[in-house]
Length: 81
Image (cartoon, rainbow, N blue to C red; front, side):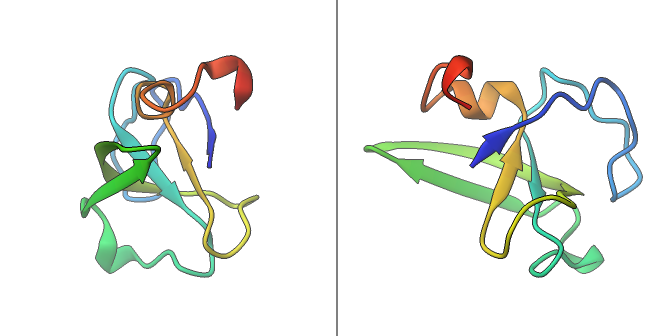
């Protein structure tokens, strides 16, 4: 998992995505437009955060996701990602 700053740009699902939102971008292999807006629970080290699938991560490998800063920082400091 890595993080990115969408900065208000349109995600692959067609909505503007702000850095402060709880958004997830899925790798191209697993991504499907029918999944747009799906709620995704991410768990790590006993912590779980929920985000909305709103984008596609072109540079992610199969099984990987990219998330906005609020999602990432729930698990690790941004300096790690």
